[in-house]
Length: 223
Ligand SMILES: Nc1ncnc2c1ncn2[C@@H]1O[C@H](COP(=O)(O)OP(=O)(O)OP(=O)(O)O)[C@@H](O)[C@H]1O
Ligand SMILES: [Mg+2]
Image (cartoon, rainbow, N blue to C red; front, side):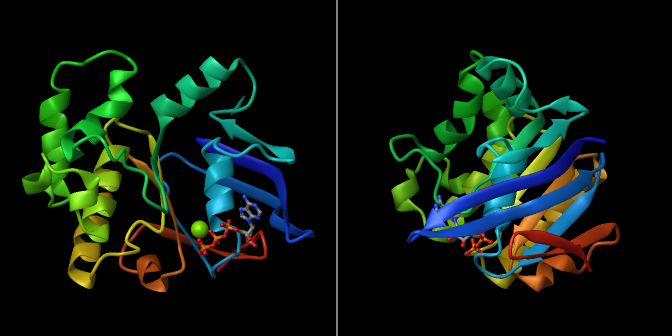
């Protein structure tokens, strides 16, 4: 199993009231799955992706990546495994404002030193999401949907085995949404695993190998 979540539990305090954002989640994500998780606002989708991606620590339960506890080992090891395995498309703005579009894509790689061909790779990804002509612009000079596409392109820079995408087509028009989903499907054909969380039930249709789960009050249900 690529990723296995076991009895994940996460509680937040909101206005002095406990909220169970993840309520005993069990989820297996196999190699080359294309999983869509549908749920209303506040159902716990972002919390679940953050738990899977290792950005939020569970109160209890485990996340295993290829059978290895994602939280075992030193911080450096944990982040290395995460960076090599996972590409993350965040729900909200996540681009560095002082870097150009092209530089934003190169940033995750720069921690490991410059790599041959990475500049061309960034341009190829920008082309795939239809935003290459903005490569030298700064994020503040882009529309919301354009920034979203840059964030999507960035998630693929490390050749991740799995892409976790939080409402990836949130601020896109229908045509652009279709282009982005087609890009995801192409990558899926090439072996990438996907977990997409969204409230948009349209994203749960139109792909042959689709697996859809519903999220409600921090729990997952098969459709
Ligand atoms: N850092 C936090 N502190 C307190 N409560 C939080 C925090 N993060 C999430 N919550 C609460 O946990 C619940 C689930 O939130 P989450 O962001 O996971 O929902 P979501 O399904 O992603 O919603 P949306 O579709 O609006 O993005 C909500 O009730 C929210 O208020
Ligand atoms: Mg969310």
